[in-house]
Image (cartoon, rainbow, N blue to C red; front, side):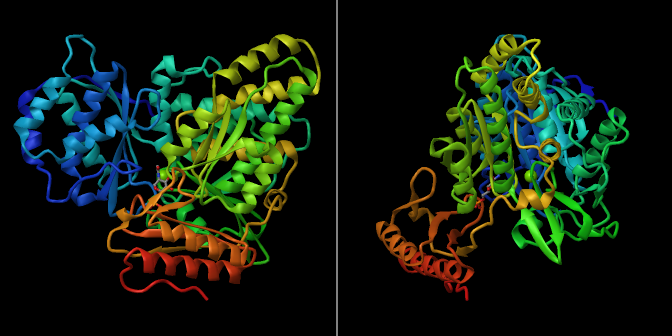
Length: 567
Ligand code: 16G
Ligand code: MG
């Protein structure tokens, strides 16, 4: 099994200067967006050099190891990107982003070197950077620039090679034990990651005596990306513990087809179509399937019946998880009524289908639902802030469950109350206690989510169609409107309402009331467009509302070209 390569610092101001001189930034203003720096691979080398610097400064500043991941996730092969993970394994916070943007756009090498000097401390702490990369052809060379620069600045490198984004975040979190809750055994390398996932999955399934579905394989579309090899290793780790376990059939290996093209979670979720399987013919009619994205931090499930594809997206995953967590917590409380209450809740974005929000209201009550601004860092933060057990999922399949201190306290007390007792509450305790090790606590993780969903379905004795049937999505429609300047649009904090121009919301309210639907508009954070979302009781009404909302934006926000019309 692959072990990380450790590279010591090679302090060299000359080498640093040479790297900066050889890779000057171009004319484009470089922005650290919601998912880090992400551009056409051809312009990325200066960014990589500067990220090597910023990661070193970040590690210095925090006096702890940080992470750097080279990937462009669900984008096509021509793109690449890079993002930095903070010592707690989460995405770098906004102060780090500001520094990264400043450094990436600084053309004057002397000024850049002066900025570095401001960070130097007297301590003899050696910065440590975990690095990982995806399968893109340019990733090794780009990653090497980060490594060379960071070493020249005095960093030690722990190179994990080709790994998924969540594995890199896992390595950083597990490498910084003070951030790791006590219930999770530290497993900082790739081997430990797989054994932790496989053992916790196995332990979760072992709490159920009902018949397991060992027949049909679970087909995994790896998007021709980095998830392919790792899903197979995970499968092997599971089979080593239980050889009779349901097989995982992992398809779409890197190189068999174009990365993320007509395959992968983004394609399946947006086009509502099954993926192309480039390396095999899968008979989808009998299967239950999942699609990962190119760096395996997103997952959606689907099944095909009578030539109709049914998608189980991030919303449906969130509903499955909340229902399970609520049932287990209630079972625990029934046998241990003295336990302190824990706040169980879910964070969705405005894009969550109204039918899922309605379902979650039934399960959790209205106080268990928070709607946050679109983007992983916002939903992650909201889940940690509002809940002791916080589920978050974007409809696109990125999500996880965060467990806070009150949850661990509750588990410890439950253990004292229920020790030695054989009751439903003890089973619930076992189940809940194993979850923090199975569910990635740093970021959404397709492989961890895959096992979690599969275990819950098996424990509940549910088939994929049973899961699918918990609610039916309301018809919805998304659109893009081009405008002169999308920055004139201001929304409320969670982007459900437009605050400016004022007339937009007034007109949207009238349009929504006409069709008993819901619509919102927001400026995109990743493209120069305004996004429109509309949902209504029927497909025709959803189209009508989307057309009207797009027309409102076009008219009141200086539209360019033509407003989209849906018929
Ligand atoms: C980024 C976000 C994703 C969000 C999307 C919205 C991360 C890792 N990714 O891809 O969560 O759904 O942006 O894009 O944060 P938009 O602002 O263009 O609609
Ligand atoms: Mg991704």
